Amino acid sequence: MTATPSTGPTHFIHEIIEQDLRTNGNGANGQVVTRFPPEPNAFLHIGHAKAICLDFGTALKYGGRCHLRMDDTNPVKEKQEYIDAIKVDVRWLGFGWGEHEYHASDYFGQLYDWAVLLIRAGKAFVCDLPPEEVSRTRGTLTSPGTPSPYRERSVEENLELFEGMRAGRFPNGARTLRAKIDMAHPNLNMRDPVMYRILHAEHPRTGNAWCIYPMYDWAHGQSDWIEGITHSLCDQAYEEHRPLYDWFLDQLIALGAKSPNAGYRPKQREFARLNLPFTVLSKRRFLDWVEGGFVKGLDDPRMPTLSGLRRRGFTSEAIRDFCQRIGVAKRENVIEYALLEHCVREDLNKRAPRAMAVLRPLKVVIENYPEGQIEELEAVNNPEDPAAGTRKVPFGREIYIEQEDFAEVPPPKYYRLSPGKEVRLRWGYLITCTGVVKDPATGAITELRCTYDPATRGGNPPDGRKVKATIHWVSAAKAVDAEVRLYDHLFSKEDPDDAPEGSDWRVNINPKSLEVLSGVKVEPSLADTASGAKQWTDGIGRYQFERQGYFCVDADSKPGRLVFNRTVGLRDTWAKEAAKTGGKG
Image 1 (cartoon, rainbow, N blue to C red):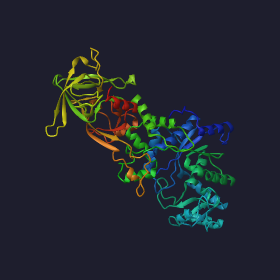
Image 2 (cartoon, one colour):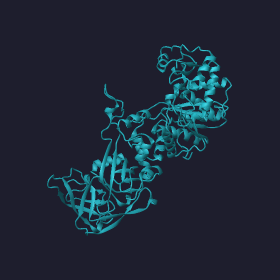
Image 3 (tube, one colour):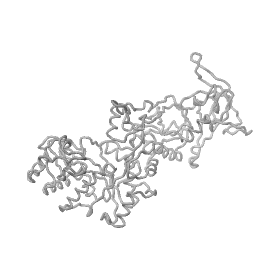
Image 4 (cartoon, rainbow, N blue to C red):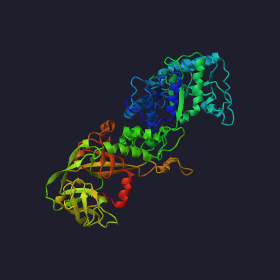
């Protein structure tokens, strides 16, 4: 684990751990061992980042260790691609697990032996009911379930049938192994839950060695016990599963089972999962978005996956800061997306070098500037980081400015360029608009004619006259062409599932979630920016385009094609001020 331990306020999970440490309440003699147990059936998302920071951060805080354990108990949905992606994401967030990488499949043999132990003790039985019947006979919150007609099979018959399941003698779904608990229990999870199902499918790690696979509730607690996990931290959805987690461990311990790595039993504790507006944090839903063509892949920058956020330019430091700020609560709530963006802005403001890019170019000819002359102006790379130094930006007779930085008939309080108006070019000179060139066929403005004041190099007039607006620009002769992708929320509603009767989430897809701008002009210092695929994994390739926001090089970039993604816009306070002043400053 390489990230710095959290120094934030203690929350209820840490209070529980500190109480255990004071009283040896978990019997672990001062150890703190946590685990992050993702299912390798999809890419991780921002909600998993909260769990990762909690699991690994807690172990760091108390001088313990955190295991990475793949919950690979469903070979139908699991892929090596997802296993590899999970490792990349956890490392990118700043955490490592050293030698402690595990898989639930490592324990298939031990889990099977313990299941046999429960059968011999009359605590589990083989059931022939199909899945839909198991569900139907479970009962409701107000009525008890109906016992399976196979519940009272003899131990000998159950052992023989379970061995037959293991040997592959039965087809998928023909039989299950169920725990024998209480069909009238107020907690539905305790009503003879399924422990094993038959799945004739090749596993990414074990191949065809097994055709029965443990359910999560059976594999989870026992895997924790085997690994010596002291505190098993889960999201709130698993609170109702905790009695079953404890029941399995209680039965095994009572029957004399021994864990190879722990003389104590782990504790499960739950915390509220992360919820964000304008998206859904559900791995199952992500595939619907991809297969429906609403996004281009699981790493699309509109996705809440960690790979999507990384490709959009979010930093791991910002995500860790976000997770620290939102804290750990007991009950679910919705966290404003603006807080996540604020954390990203705050981080990038300190580290991102500045550059100038004109997204919607309008050509300007400075008529009194010498033809063919190119000079280099000094520009500060990052005013928040003096060590970042300066760079040279070329300036010449012809430049590009933003279309929105000129108004032929300016509205009230518009301080940017207009006929007869003087503005400051960032790091450059003061210029005054003297004429407008239009397309005779359409009347559209195609070019501006201006003059410059040679005495104002660096933007500071020697006579002290006041100029209210500063605009960015790029040299027409030296500009580099680029493509820029502007992203917005994938959904137009805070709750994507809030749809009229008879429709679904598809009606809330935001048709303006992606705008692609071609013909963007960027300063030449960006011409040699390396491939985006490298950039967004090693933390390089992120910039603040002055007055535009924060951008990063996209993985689609290659020699001769430069592509940028907008990560986030500038601060809301700046945007409000710009709206009031027409771009002043």
